[in-house]
Image (cartoon, rainbow, N blue to C red; front, top):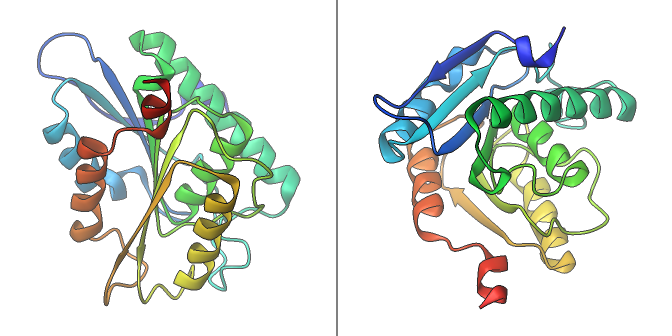
Length: 215
């Protein structure tokens, strides 16, 4: 499959060329349409954004035990999917003439885990990353310098336990990453409106740490 030709749901601005780009990744075993509620929310909050929901980049299955939250068989398969996703994002950035810093990547479950892996392999390809109910398959050795990470998780997530994501966040803090963690009480492994609303708040109110350092 040629990544730029991936079947994709697109929400484009009503008028004018897009000035921002959101790429939303569904959970393993899911469909692009699963991300429509989040896509519509982001499109409403960021009227000049193109919101794209590609089908199938995440992978065909998920590991309910959470040992392989990315839904990938091994490190080689993970790397291949990361590169396919990177190619897709670059193609859309070129298509819309949008900067990497004006690109945001969001994923749920396996899609979030794939997004986190991409932020490690391609720092700055997306300026912002939203991880809903995901986790690292392989911990990064260094913090991304050009990507701000927002982790959003349900307290009762049985697929990717909260303890695992807390460990991810603590590791990111030790590396000096620009990252946040929001936990929603009583929620499981779901793309819940409470988490989506918090994600929009993070995007609208959090100034990336790299911008503060540049002042």
